[in-house]
Image 1: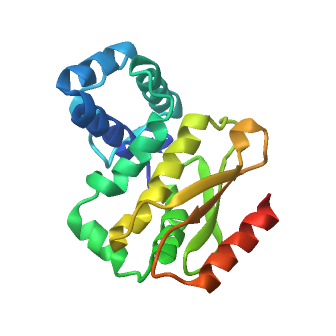
Image 2 (image 1 turned 120 degrees about the vertical axis):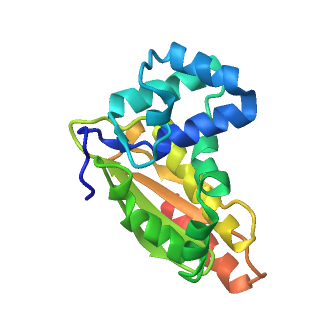
Length: 209
């Protein structure tokens, strides 16, 4: 796990992605308004420094303030997708593509989640040609919040776009924020038509229902 200089729990890649999304969608004035609404006094440069860390409470306050301020309850998902759609440098995307296929990237994202969050346990439980099953859990004493569930959904949904296909379909079949022991995400995406792959996903959905 990376050394956290200020003791924060969440990497500032999350706050940076949020601010980038707000700036792109609503303009620089909206960024200023959001910081005021969240009571955020740190310099903008610090919040956008992806190597830094923030507390869980401060990051949650920014995300929840954005959801209320912009009347967008799904902003977590949109910001999560921003990470791979626009925020990652091209050379990073190329390194991830080199892993081979979307399922391999999903597995890598899960295995390296502790680089972004010191309070999240994440793993890829299983995967196939067109799907992956991902588990995520916030560790005590921190509580899971739905807006961060959405953030992970958005991030996972954007993975296949690295391979020039559309956003994945992500279904959260279990949710820790709603009382489950973990969040469980079924991620599926389109590739060349394959009846066998379709049947595999349908079978998995049936088992999870």
